[in-house]
Length: 403
Image 1: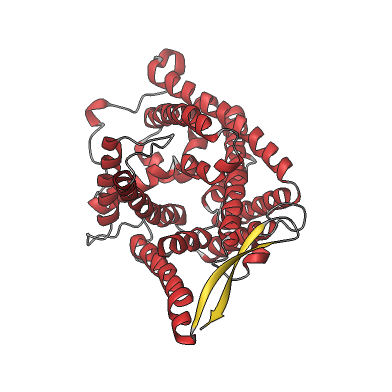
Image 2 (image 1 turned 60 degrees about the vertical axis):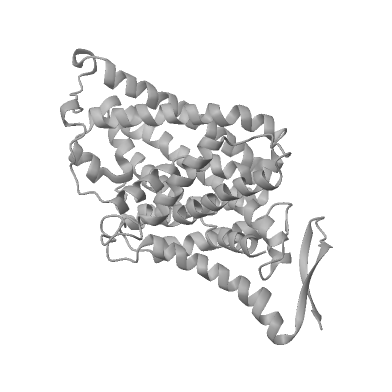
């Protein structure tokens, strides 16, 4: 029960969507010609989050249709990014009229200070770029024939995304100067569009398209978080589970959506006006690495205990060992350094790895208090029973049985 409670409580604790709404706010303001200050970016992102929550809360069907449309738009933008990378990399200056700033003799030249902790933080941020593939498993029960779908969509999506990332980064390095890359922040995409396609089509239209793609991510992430939180509350481990697990009032997980919006608002408005984006990515990513590491160890244990069981989707032995080695490095390196692994400007903030561990300790403490200490002190035993609610959902309720 310990691992289950810790993971589920952690899932609700980090059930906010910050990164995508910040990206949406910044790109949307840039596209319509408004200076994207910290305050304007955050308010714009939160307003879009509330609109998204209202749509998902009133009609899950329409919310999914909107996010599917925005997903198609994202694929179109990915094609444009790949073609941009090819255009800027392989076509001569006489055609592109773009100066090539990528020189191979300077490619491996270290331009900033680096440490093992900062490298591990960078790797965690890079893995966040593939976070969509991790979250898809949380809604696998809503996918028709998920095993077959994952076997096809998994490799195909990873190949598409990898190609897109490679050519996009090549385009950045070819077109944009190093100093501009460091100073542009999340708006580097808008800067690339403007340099390659001009102001009207590049900075305005394509930047707005990028904002729409970020908006699609808000739709997907909010829906995923709300469904995940709803499943957690169905297990009855947290207070108010019967209310939070319901589909009130319109057959949609509105209570879980409201909770995610509340947590997102608190984090967005309560964080400083610095690189909170990078800090949140690392803070969210660090516990995920630990959970992935534990799951990797669990694969070896299950295969040894049940050698006759063959999973329909099976990880290779070499790949599993490699993942475990990488996870070990990413988990240890931020702690085994004197330099802060935090983003620039937040070096005085607590180490993101320590904060993440404290959050996990809080989850363990909750399990210990609710399911070990209190029952022992007050002389009762907790037994779970299933209750069917008015909306047809079955929710577990932990009953106190006094000895």
